[in-house]
Image 1: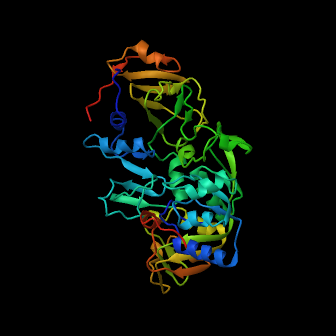
Image 2: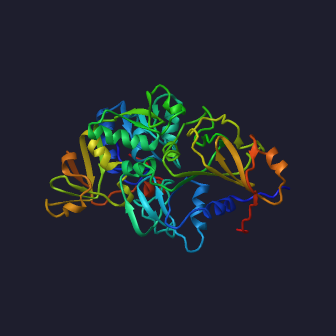
Image 3: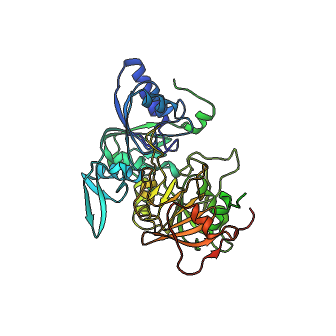
Length: 219
Length: 223
């Protein structure tokens, strides 16, 4: 799982560190990646796809201003796509983190995306059964962490990050600043440290949008 | 040359039906224009799927903060009283019946309320986003669309031929020629441009246009 919605909340530095490792060691490869999108330009998730780390994408919207990395890989048959309605994607991840193996939603009833899925009627209305999503690892971008792993986020960069931190066996979080325990007001904590396994301080994180406007490429 | 409303004028007409304090989700693209045309004295609270309630206009160029964007990935600003939340809460607002209206674009709308607005067929990379969630749960699901395609084919049809976004979900359609409600599996004509006859409008519509009560003139300012 990789947090973010488009570029906001995307852990660019963690993704680039993973690509650098894959280029040096040829591992990991053939990853299944869960993200709302499928990359933009030639940095972050798009660069992961360009460098062959990704075998399957689970996402809601694999289009962007410059979706060439995913599109070319998809058209060559090198990458599989599981398309999921956006709210269903969020809830599947939340369910994964919350220990709920399946749930029913009205989204996609009567459409192509419901084919092959169990349906049931509740109070006279049809619903589709969807299953939880869990991951081995989540790469997360937050704003401030304390040494207990408690996290705050910055504006709309929150998006999928708190859900993915819950749903992965091992959550790796990049933050702008790590402060001593007690310095974040408990009332303002969004992700409690129980969901966090590792912290990496990245004091001045890049924004995918800025990198793409500068036509950046990784590596 | 037939008179037709511009996209901005269709958005203006839709904006007149939004009440003060309504919670509204606007689809990406042309429905986003609805926010510009709120009547004086009325202020809706706009929801964006990525996790913001109460956002305002785009910031001036150069002042964008890329942690503050809408579902179309465009930079936005906040109004007093805005709130942030994660994606599962955002779609709880959508499916849980908390939005007063979702206002979306369409490829086709059928007289039974079915909507097709996410896929034009098997070619290319499929993408759905939040459309299939948004059509369930909002108290009103309204569609903004030209009355026909660029080739002149009806977009209001008896049954959708393109892949469906949702079944029986649309309640009102604002087109470049008319305002049409969907009730009991039929199109009910509410308003039409004075410059088009009922018969001509019917000939541009792919299913029966019923009339119950008065059909008023669709009047929209120059924009």
